Image 1 (cartoon, rainbow, N blue to C red):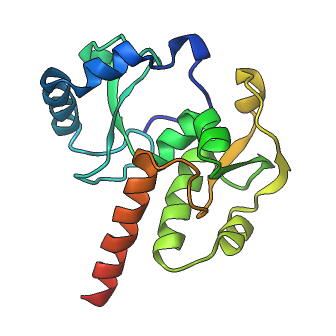
Image 2: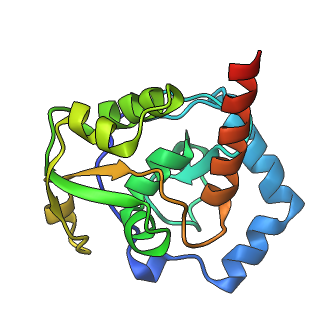
Length: 178
């Protein structure tokens, strides 16, 4: 597994309308599918595997750099940490902490496992020993010294994370019924 740290894509590299149109094209969907299959639909950071809502991620954060070597599969939760500005400000589901007993990869794994078991955020935060909540700052040096916690709050924007969260909750409920 690759080490996961809080980061953000510089605003000058954010997707613009021209890039968004490229992503809708059949060629992108085929390319994305190839990346997902190549990496067995498995997140490079936490090992979570799912055939739905995984992300074909640009490692360098540049959505124009579609070389195979610049692509990896990441899950929705790890994506919110990698793009912490989106997780903290746009979606408002990521909380930042100065201290934890665990590294970021392990925080994601434990959070998912405990949430699957029905644990509430407060219990998960306690187990992770997350302390000293801090604000988001668009500063890589600052972000690399802290950790993120993906809360169970509903995201503000109904983008892919929102749809994955609803799908995930339904799948989890179905697993408990069987």
